[in-house]
Length: 236
Image (tube, rainbow, N blue to C red; front, side, top):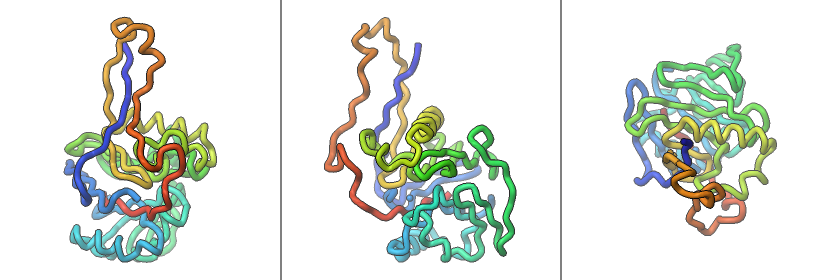
């Protein structure tokens, strides 16, 4: 007996709050993307005011943020780091404490960086090369949430994510790892989506079921890259 994994949209308009213990996740804006508030991806400089408004809507000022994680080094994901002068910065695999002191950590695909109970940073290489990371939060109301940058562009991105990847082989490995663990995925350029795992019994369903793949609902972007859009933050 094996399982078929499919995805489906997570209903609700931003901000989407997923309460948990001890950490909760708040998706501030439609995914275009320690102690105290942690921000995952800041968007580009063109999204500055939208990001500040979204944070203010959660009662968070830039000086309150204690850690900013940049999932990878592309400008649409780390273009507002300067807004958070008191935060430690984890950009890709580079961990810098306030004041400029670099912190060694040993992060790797087989060694997540544990920030707290149920809160980890995973090495998820592929899209931007070998140093992409994702933030994984366990224990929310919907289970484990993975904030993955551009490991997933959006739900239903099969057919074009490979063209945007520096290492498609590594990214495919990262995608499978995320889908094998997460219950909710927050992608880099789309709305959060659910991961649904269903039991699959090939003997019961017949041999033709072996070649069937879950079908995604086509949309305007199907078959090609999504329209450019800012990648904005997710508060943990």
